[in-house]
Amino acid sequence: MKIADIQVIRFRTTSRNYPTKYGYYYWGKEHPSVASLTKIITDDGLEGYNLGGDQATMDNVVKPLLVGENPLDREKLWQWMSQHPGFSEGLAGMIDSALWDLYGRMVGLPVHKCLGGYRERIKAYASTWPNMGKPEDYAKHAVEMKKKGYKAYKVHAYIYFNPYTWEHAPQLPGFPKADIEVCRAVREAVGPDMVLMLDPFGVYTLEESIWVGHELEKLGYYWLEHPMIETRVEAYRRLCRELDIAVCSPEHAPGGIFTRAEWVLQGASDMSRIDINYGGITGSYKHAMLCQAYGIQCEMHGGGWCNSHILGATPESTCEYFERGLLRPDLDYDKPAPYLKAICDPLDNDGNVLLPTKPGLGMEFVWDYINDNLIKD
Ligand SMILES: [Mg+2]
Image (cartoon, rainbow, N blue to C red; front, side, top):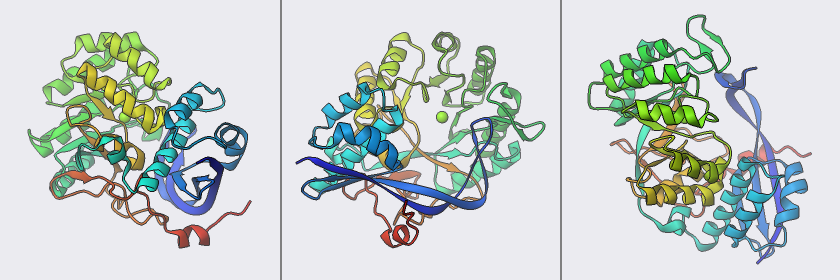
């Protein structure tokens, strides 16, 4: 079996995300946008899919490396893509995940069963949009999520945003006092038993992170995630020495599993973190296993079709939570995108996500919608 072609299908859809000039996103009115699907095709007619991709990158970078290769040689192709300067980590991760989709479709099993199944439902935390309002808005939202069955809630407070002028802003300076007011309002609203986390998205200095960490300890929060820009490893080591609350990072450090292995050795975080943009399913699973061997948690960043399979193939002691979101009061999260038959992470009444059960990554496409909105270049 050989990879014969890689095609990108582009189609019109809508989005409510807008980029700011500082590089972050905000939520607004629905507007037209373009989405894409990458399809890997073999010489005997098998197919593997993933969301995203553009044809020029496939033609110039991916196809020269992959066409003619056996799509089941995922480890070899992962090594080749990791070593190829033309592949960003995100591109390599996307293609690796599409190869897993192809294999899962071929054998008729979800990817987490191919990796080695462990769980079919995962404890979820409700993960908020940032800049969602005042402390009382977060408190109200947290209570609603508790009523839906969630046992855990993660605050994204004020990120690339000034809560005093109510304007978009650069990443630093952050606003630790305003963030802690949100965290306090949420704790007071949901009571002592709900598991709570804060993700400030790298907006603090070391001294601010120490102050915030101690405040969260008083409020009984479970983890402090990604408090500083993650290229400053020594600052993270010092932070972990200062705090009792678990520090969960790195989320965005480039270098995939290799950078994360160094963080583990350096004691730069208490819980590690990865997602498929930093190594695909192959790399994320390797990192989860490395963390397991060291006896530390590897908390998957973000939900989605690809990340969910790492959770299905690991015990709760290695990867505890599914990050469900981002959620906000004016978003119907349970409604699938118009090009997908279902969301990847339906919630049961007890705050657990039910993992995909269909073959491969588990996506089923609404081809009528995609074909009706096809962009022919
Ligand atoms: Mg995060």
